[in-house]
Length: 113
Length: 109
Image 1 (tube, each protein chain N blue to C red):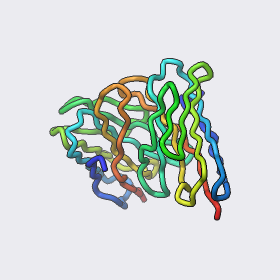
Image 2 (tube, rainbow over the protein chains, first blue to last red):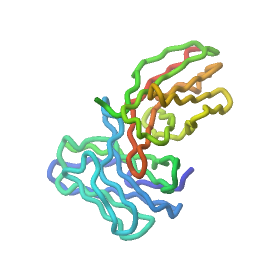
Image 3 (tube, helix red, strand yellow):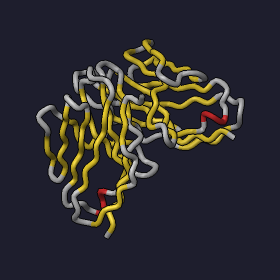
Image 4 (cartoon, one colour):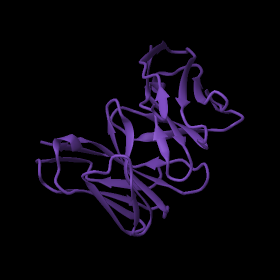
């Protein structure tokens, strides 16, 4: 296993509430990513980080923010959750070398009611 | 046009069969290629990287055709435990990873 832990594993929340998902790695990898996976869409990039305090937007970043204050932690926040954000969220890490693959955490299943 | 396209299947094959999946990518500048396996309600796990000359890992063979912009995965002697969704992933360099929507495989006893 690549040493990535996501928390919580499952979350049910109400529309309009803030939610924070956590990704923790023990690999000291520079690159960390947040993806969401929905039927028919595959995995889509929300935000990624290329170092402490260095983050950038992905394909579906609206409604999400991230923070990375330590190498090992990458937080994803839904400022005001909506039902369209019901999804499975995966964190991934990458060594940042040419041809290096992504390694995924075990996912967070989020339901917004 | 999608960056990466896969036939979603489902592929239902008997044990012992050989099955092949293809994945096409749209950007000729794509640099690295991977196959992942995803079990139901689990995270994607790296099955194998795909190298230009093709590569094999046990019963699994991956091929890359840059001219036609596709990669393939061949599974020989299918096992029940091979039942999963197989994701094609293409990296265009840096942080640009693109995912297919996956091909579902069920191996039938």
